[in-house]
Length: 468
Ligand code: AMP
Ligand code: ZN
Image (cartoon, rainbow, N blue to C red; front, side, top):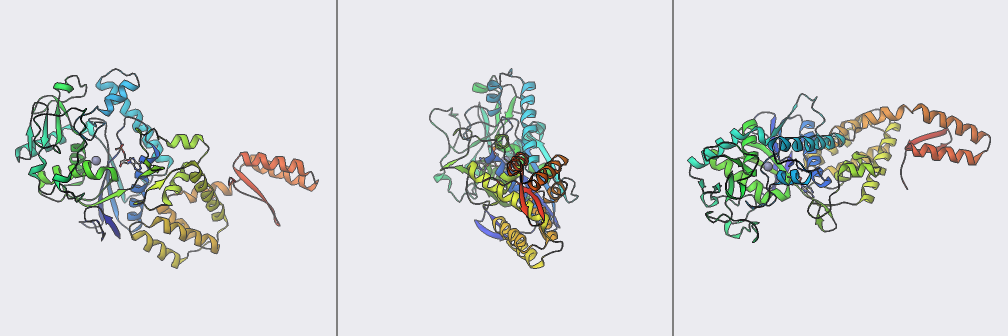
């Protein structure tokens, strides 16, 4: 398989470092609010990557974190803590207990979204193992890592925090290709700056419960007094705990490249002297017009709001797969509606497909997939099969990667609900009696339940509804 590696900025041949097992780390959500559908694109991308690896006969050892502490709203070391903000917003008391409740609430909501999108839903697959890692459960590992960095001289202490000294790590800009001098940090004038910080790009590994954080409710004892970890350190500590010092693939959205992932590399490699991750793969954004979908921009659309508009969550999945993961994708309700029509046409066509496989199509599908996950082209192969009318077995194999749940849909569609059957009989009767008005009424009732009725030479047929 070949993947684009952000580290080398090239498409490279991929093989796991050892045997058949691929070790993947994914930056998970900060569980302080609902995920928006931009966030969810990131996990649809992970899902496709993992499914493609499994399709190629690999095993996958996957770790994803849940940031339930210490993620500041600004990329700089200042700014408000996202979790603290959530407590205030929802009228919870500022206690560790309520912080846990908020984290739990949004973790459940997040995992529920993933389920609806058929993401990571192959936990029964013996070749796949997933570990959900909560930052607050791994304080010790994070402190241990900071201790190593202090001992090795990569970190220093001020009254406020322990910082990583970026000047001590010569390869600091290797992921972005930027030199340190060119790096613009996100420190804005109005936000707090620690006067004892040596370089502007130095980032906090550990915050002390002092100064502006004196009232912070989440804190743990450490060699530097009570405090809490910085955001970046959690990913390094948890990734290395579960997957070892060198990962095969690290994933995340493109917004993480310049700060979060750059810092993960610096602190991990400084501590171990080894490559932290061999491959870095990043998904592009969901945009609305020219802007990235983001909470702050007021363009916050959740999966549930799509469902409330009558859209099938798998239609959003189909919509995302229509673009390569390294291309921006412009969201609109109309576009997801069009994706739903395509998906329903696909389901309906699948029922009529003849058994058997289409070996040339399978070869083409795999070749495209193995070329940096050419999923949009793979969808074209799917439609080619539909056109020929043969090859349901191949299509079901492709669905192991695409995840449209075709197998269950066929079952569902071949068992027409009793209520619809009755309506069809009534309509047949009305047609016999040339009562076209009644026949049309019944057609509309059937449409409410999500089906189109077609009058064919062999009688009435139903298909999944396609909206005009
Ligand atoms: P966060 O909870 O902010 O850390 O985001 C979770 C994941 O979603 C990260 O991998 C982000 O890079 C990714 N992400 C954030 N916004 C978007 C967007 N508009 N489109 C695609 N991915 C995004
Ligand atoms: Zn991370």
